[in-house]
Length: 348
Image (cartoon, rainbow, N blue to C red):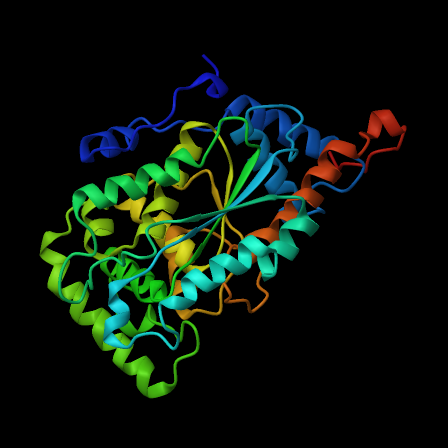
């Protein structure tokens, strides 16, 4: 059975979720070796295309095909609302989430323009915007049932035929959730994970940091695994991202994560399965301070550093252009033999 013949991934229960996190597929080492050999035989000094070479090898290994392709790319933006906004942690009201979803659907947002440019199909999936998660400073963000529904929504958005998936989010208050998830997962100090989000001033930033720190302290003893982490401190759109990442892994689909919030959502999986994000690339380094710490904790080097912090998969869409450059050179260049170009002399 090939990965395109696999049945849909079920995340409808806690047990199913943990079963999906065991025996995760690994990249095709034969394809990786073949791709590396091809890179070393193309008409250029070895390694001279730097990250572009690494990305083509990554794509070949995870797609398990030659040549790797980007014919069918989906950009999925999940949207959700958060009860934590009751604590005054955001500069915008929750109604903006729905308003921005409408903007996406009408084609007026940044991500619409970037997806058109990068040739990615945009899908916007809103999760119960009229039903915010619980205020995780006072209670768990989600019940087990709500979490499973959100995880399954994410998994159901992924299809085996996809060549690559871009994952982004929209949700007023979700930078607080991302900071709490990261703090609970990797420790350190709360202020290293908490940023301005949609533009908080210094006083409100200090308040947000305090809220996140106290919330994590409240739930810490109840967080034993990835499921607990998302249930206590996550959001519906963040859980959907985690579900999508997990489904993509089972289908051998490479993933471009957007910024801090998308990365934090996906990172929850490593609490249970440390290698859960091996098929993921960080598209860019967000200005949100927590993203740098998160990238280091995950030992992943972002593709771009453009001082972006918008979210909505905008960084992932720009990084897709780099990925296209990687495969254009890998698939299109001639080898030394084909071009009848002399190789560099090697010393004995």
